[in-house]
Image 1 (cartoon, rainbow over the protein chains, first blue to last red):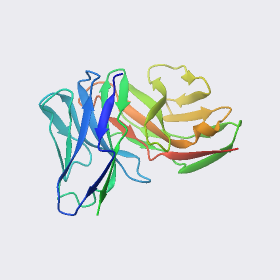
Image 2: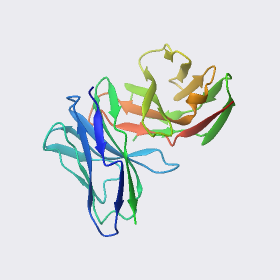
Image 3: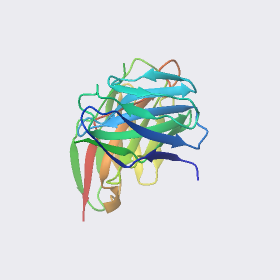
Length: 110
Length: 117
């Protein structure tokens, strides 16, 4: 079955470390997105990519980086510059007909 | 920029009763889509219902229906015959159809719905 796979499900990071969250899709969707979810704030857009080798900043891109070298993959790196990285991260892909979401990664800074 | 507002942080309903979740949005665009997503404790985002702005008829999916008031920029979700499995966080979301912002979902803050037996 087609879908989006996010890994790992839980991730712990020490302060000052960079960490990369994986997002892979086999839906042949051109567009992919990363959202951050905090309690009481809904989902906020971090980065998005509409085609391979191109991506755009969303509303809260500071402290994050992405790459889109393959259509299937859109990894998100949380850098040490991100002041408060503890959150739930959702990856998604879309066509004009709708969105598909991954199951998320819970990142905790220890 | 588009904004989506859900003014009810939490709601509760008895099983088999009806509940309505509110959502308002702000946009200067005329061509857009509105969605309600459900996020159960598993945190998987599940599409509940979708409304095209150019359609006057309110969307319906089984027990779920919307009241879309375009002039008032209001998009409420009605859940009839509530079931325990409806317990979840519900998000209202907006997407602009066309232009450079095409494809980006803007979410409201969410409403936690609890269905009591």
